Length: 286
Image (cartoon, helix red, strand yellow):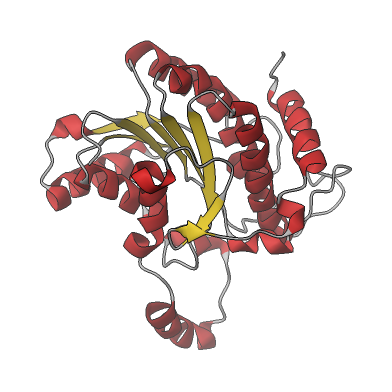
């Protein structure tokens, strides 16, 4: 049970994020749904209350646009001002294989939202997480990280862009971020772990084009082979709530079990360099 605990879930208005929020509320935790589309978030919050039988005190909605560093800072300022504690931060929101677009700050959208937005968000909330220790950070990555590479000469896709490669790079960045943050948090009482949820039926793939003639077969296969959002959210809820991972630091999980990563996702030199460059990109001065 998570009674008395406050949890932030980014991208909680649909898919895995909504199912994660519902799972936390089911355990009597209080969820702050951090979302860009407030209308959809409010609707999702009502659905969660109906589904779980919880009253309004356990579900709150706040505006957060991870494609805007200004929005990230404003969100964190509000949390620090209004919330006496933060027990879990779940970095769930993501953009998947979108056409080449830029964030408000000029970053390639997938790298900007999936990595940099969450990088700044986590950085700005670390003090309140430390004050609330023992506390946790949960990072949602993807097995598609395997197809990604960190090209420090073109992190922002100025020279070339492939939407699949860009997504995989952002998910690899999530894992490297988890490793480096874990190293920096040793002894702080805050743990960070990542997860890969598997292939889940969500609207994340709305930018993926399926030929019209193949769509009926694709839809049939997806219902038979893909996880439901609730199944995809189980590892997120597990990492947020289970005593089995008390003190576990810097690991990756799949299906609620430790998952062995490729070496490129755990390279300490690459993780440290990516961290330093990310700080510069989001304007962190230390």
